[in-house]
Length: 325
Ligand SMILES: [Zn+2]
Image 1 (tube, rainbow, N blue to C red):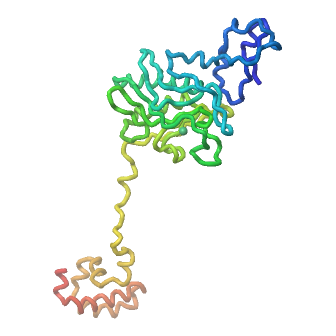
Image 2 (cartoon, helix red, strand yellow):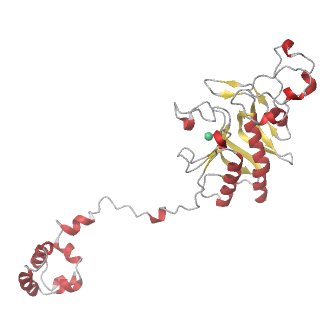
């Protein structure tokens, strides 16, 4: 367990704050969580137990100037789901006091709400400004949700279960337009800017092309991994697919198989049609007479075909009518 910094800063003995859960976010440790005057002077051994824990540093820092995010009770379970220091993020408040609503309000830990607010206030507000408009809404596709990864039963607990994740699909602008993050119709450079900003701020970002579960939304979370390993997987597809125009038109079901038609079982005319016009124009007699002496020299595969073709042609289409075909 790591003792908070304030335990060392005060000269008098103070009651130790509630033990910090192992999975709690790191950010609050950077700042004192309580005012020194609040609890100074009370010996630790005599501390009266049932006082609500002081607000976390995160909670203190996440003011109404930054976000409308009232605290809600800790979520404990089922299983490993939930967490402490929970808020309901209703809106991010921009520097000019206008609000960017989360629709619906998102349930998450204070640290995640702070990260989302910073991202919106800094990067996304700036992106909307570059489009000569303002950001007004984020669609909350999913926030806290006690479930396995990708909604798979038995899978490792999703960061959604730890209230450390948010899924969104688009950014709604004041001019009525929506920056749909996974749509090819959204200008590619806009989607790339959102990708770069998210991946620079959140250790996990998953979108189209990542694992098949994020084709219609973007997931980002605050998962902590060994060595600060980060995952940024979001293929920003081109406006128009490169592959589709190269796809051949499907062969109709009723079409005869090409290979078979050329070899056997097909009418003689079909085979003749594939031959050069000169060959078809040869008089029957000549063909028939020449075919015989050539037989020994001809390749085995061609032998029968040469001998048969004129005969069938003669039976069906008398010369010179075959020239008209
Ligand atoms: Zn997600």
